Length: 188
Image (cartoon, rainbow, N blue to C red; front, top):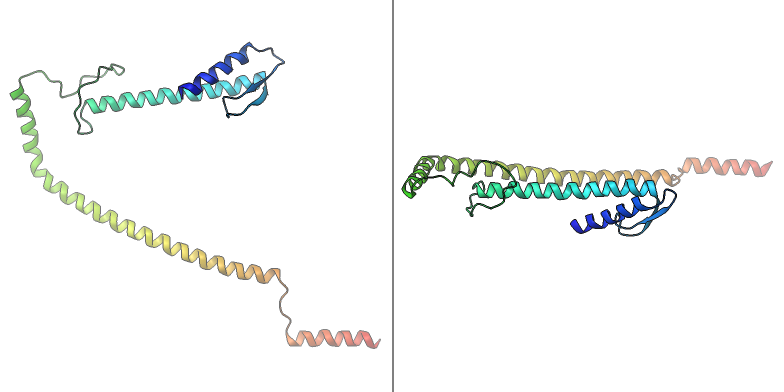
């Protein structure tokens, strides 16, 4: 992304340096040369420049947030706190002052309080999984049913459409009437 930004930036500077009535070949936007007048080229290159800058900034912000969350054990993993200070947030919870015994006691207390809830959580997870399985089965059934219904309707419409485009078969009575009309015309 930064390479594309550099190419767009280079062409943008060249566009600003060009004369007002000059046409410019812009390659960095689509990957092939496109000839534009100076004002249109500047507008397109500025839009592309802003898009690349926004993408890079968003990626860096998300990376910083994820790094901060990882440092704070939000994902259940431990790594050394990063030296990045891009976000000025309070230090993560595991960087407490105190002795090792105090830290171990805190962990043990948390573990003891979470143990009774684990069975209830497992039951809740099983119930949610069963509900999701039932919902998925019903969704697959609905999709299959809709597919075959649509297939049936398309076949019906195909037959109706084919009949409407071709001439309908004439009944015996109608064929007799046409023959009588022809005979009448021949007699006159």
